[in-house]
Image 1 (cartoon, rainbow, N blue to C red):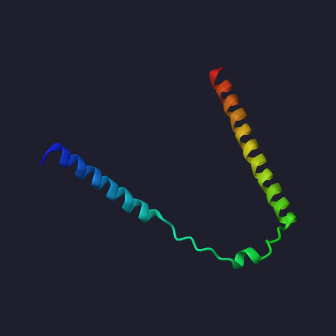
Image 2: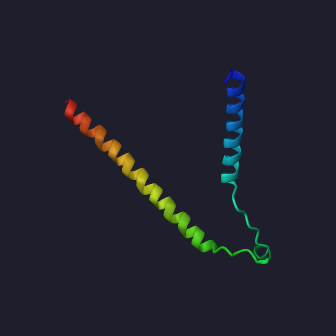
Length: 82
């Protein structure tokens, strides 16, 4: 085998490998036309507002804990240095 045959073999092998990879990755997308006719689901705004309030409360608690930890740590370092 000379280098020309080896390079042709490698190119053919690479192309076959890439073609098989492309076939393996294809997804089976099935379109369901009945979903287009259905009305969109209604969103309860009160539930969304309540979730937002809860998330803000959690963020406030996290921020308070972090700030308190920093202040206490600085105070402890100050006491230990004197």
